[in-house]
Length: 510
Ligand code: SF4
Ligand code: SF4
Image (tube, rainbow, N blue to C red):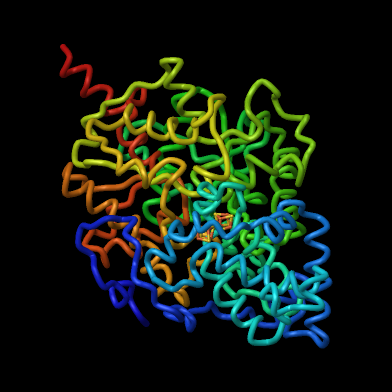
């Protein structure tokens, strides 16, 4: 199997936003595996391309245009100003002009014009209108799966056209006529069946949590609970299932547990809603998105909790922050004095602001850190009660728990952040070339801050970013474990009452 390093041409420090030479068709052969019929069937979708698929696809496009004003605006309003052309990390990393956001939109816009505009119906050559042929469908399948739905292009578009919505709609249309994506649809199927993306059964979750409790007792000298299905808890924590088994994600889970322990509030995970991630955002299926969200409400009601807190997962937070109430509400049974839902970073930050947490920053002195703003948090949501809280709050946690923190260049962070290259349902090995090349702008920005400030590690609050960076970092000359969870650093430095660390600090102070 190809490795990320097979695709890297230049890993030297350089301008992350350098515009590449055009390479038409460079990525035309890079597409994800198609979902098998049984995977499609489990989601209520046709297993193979249906008869009369063109008519059905156009009908579905009409439905989506009717239900989404922003999709209609995207189709009608682009003035070809070119402001978005060099803003996509997949264009910057591949040079393929079809990865320019406006060109990606045009794949759908040309079909829209043919079937939904008078000029396109009668004079298609005048407006670049195209029939939806099998070749066009193939092109859609290829290039709408080379969009990580990161929304960076929309920040620069003067009228705010959001290519991520266009790619979601295209994927939804394709899946509805029998051309679904294997990786995302398999994951959604497992989530709907078992409650988590990995299909982890209750016994496996319990066993992981038991071992973590033992490890924590040995490391800290404190009994830190990792509760599962504990009825009547104050808080239900919903985490991406990667937090239960993958590195560095699981270190983040340990950090959450330490924060909850120190807060004095009771908390629990749910085996029924054991997944924060909601891959239906990537496939554009509102029905599947609603099903996954519904499990969270049912679990919260069943457990009788007062609050819902989400762990570190970028797109889960985008769905939760924007749509949880619409998809699965009302949440009037929860404590209304706290955000519904709340992000774990907001929760920890509030404790810091109230002086309830103490840190020994020297515990993280082995790291010189930077922070990667995950796209779905940065451009798809907010945190706290002030604009920009989604940028400030995670950094406040890092500054509270680490002595050595350095931001990357301003044009590559915050609202302008560069995608990890694996978001939007593109994290499968079948797209490794795309992932490796799409990570290039972020890796260059990281390399620059490593040269300027000796940065050794990067922290993130997204499960997909952590997995993607774990794969591609070595190809760019970094160690695989140079990516860390924000709550891993919080957990390293937090001083737990009665812990071995607290006793050592008291002794040193005497
Ligand atoms: S949403 Fe992100 S990945 Fe998609 S076209 Fe825009 S910049 Fe590229
Ligand atoms: S920035 Fe907006 S209006 Fe300009 S070309 Fe891109 S999508 Fe069209």
